[in-house]
Length: 143
Image (cartoon, rainbow, N blue to C red):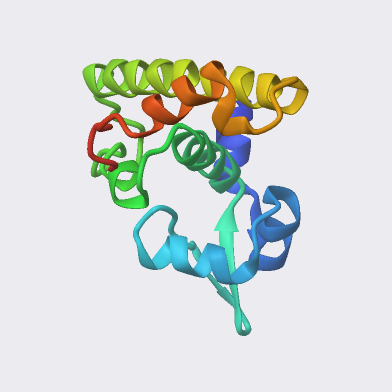
């Protein structure tokens, strides 16, 4: 039996999925409500999931870390539940992340400068003033 087939045949109850994924039971229920995961049935009062739910939750975690909304992530799965991710969308999000990294790098460097700056007041420091000017620039609408 292939490892993938083994993941589909073994089951975990919701508490096991929570323990292995690091998510709360309530988060798992919410993900199920949003269509991100699906239980395979119940044993008593506990939802049961096939073990491949852990792979799906890993994909959801990557999407969340990348800044996608849960609705956007849900749209990245085809009707069969398999990932059907728009590569152009991934490239656009990667570009967004590049811009965010650049902005945060400038901010980090500015904060380090401000912490060590010999100016008597931060407002007297030209570098800090540049940080303030950058902070007032319009940013793209947040998603």
